[in-house]
Image 1 (cartoon, rainbow, N blue to C red):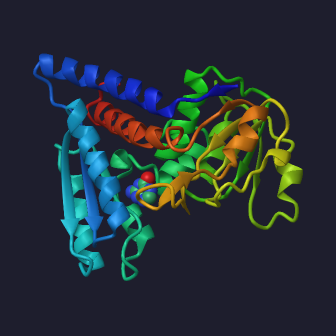
Image 2: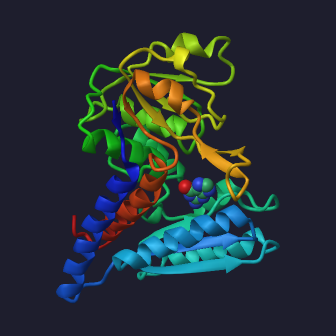
Image 3: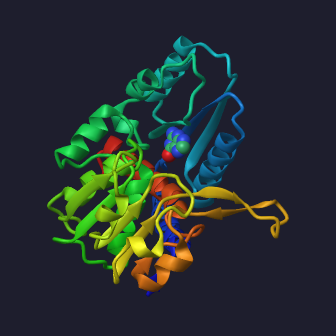
Length: 294
Ligand code: GUN
């Protein structure tokens, strides 16, 4: 059994990007830039945005964190997004979700120029993914695909079972794995909470991608021997032995499932760290495209 080290893989990707940025700087070129837009004071969103900005500065990207009051009008937010669509310093625009209830998230996502859609949430990006065109792919699924590549995991003709149908993870990873491309070309099943017997599906998985957001839901008797397990869940469970009172667990009961697996991602340290690495990679890609350097 191999434990997939997402933390080390993400660090390697960040270093590769830093070297590219150093190369741009050495010849006096412009560098990639990311602007994040945070609305209101959701504590978790603040933490996420902070780590995205920190990751940018560590590799030499330009970055800017816009923080707006929770009662800002939709109109003003849309105007700000449009301003950054036209700003040549920033190649990626990330509006942190969720947004306050009075703002239509879809409208805001659709206002982002598809050329700067480094989150891959714009319907044009998603449409391009579905029809197999080069596009921005949302960061967590892109990170999973990158792990298959870097660990040289055979996916062609394998049965990938995705548990969870979110727009951010389940649907895009299913579409990536369906493509007739390297480290994809799989047979894909998407299952979800309406399944009468989830284990009927999960037991058939050569590669199981658990992304339903339910703590340790996938048990040892729900998978077959030799399965590749990608655990996207990050759930807090009470743990009085920890000073903070909780520990983080995935959607997979790791200690039961790991002994049956050929490869498995731990939580934390598996898929999670890959998300920001892919955001940086998408921003670099946006920079190359906008500057016609690719
Ligand atoms: N909220 C939770 N995850 C994400 C993400 O990947 N991007 C954005 N923009 N908001 C999020």
